[in-house]
Image (tube, rainbow, N blue to C red; front, side, top):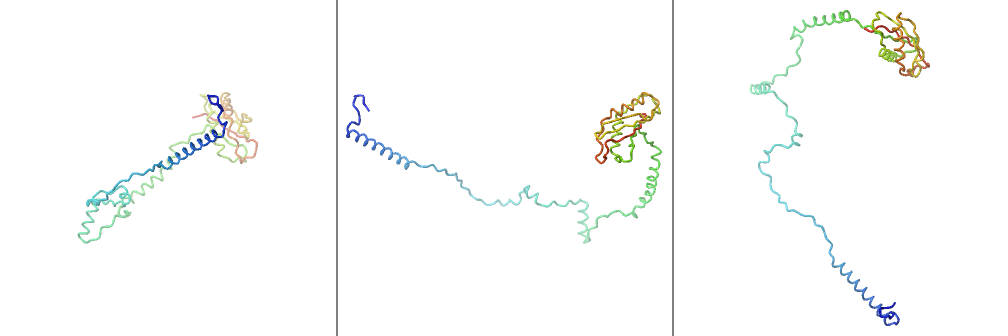
Length: 242
């Protein structure tokens, strides 16, 4: 290595020994300084704040304070006594007599008018149901659905079919006393397979309205799981709506 003067360092043993010795002293000084800094440094210790508390005695009138909500909830509710009952109890205690017993249920013999009214009410109830059917007449249904086989024993399904046909049943106006009968098949999926007119009403438009009501009601719900045939045939009677 050359200096600016052109001379090379490390040419002789004296210069090399001086450089090594200088480097040794520098490292020793740095090591001593590091140890000094480590021992001189103090670690910060966090001390929580402390407070001085002085205990005093409870005031003498602490017993007169109202109870807290917890104490009120723990105490059982006091029985409610009417003012008249209180007066009677005080009078009984003052006279040395036992308190009067509470009134029990009223016996039938104490109120004879109840027995006199009961037969009249019973007779009126017996006569009322007998007069009810005569006063109100039963409304005639405009749609009646039935199964053509005795194997189909599912009344709820018949009600569903009747309600759906009745919603789509729109007879032509002005037709009085007409009646038509239609027979149709309902497949396993609930769709209407074949429908035909069994009894005509004598009015072409009335018969066509009946056929449209059946086709417009398709599809019905699937046949019940307990019925194992692929289809079932139903007959429906359609009359004029009241």
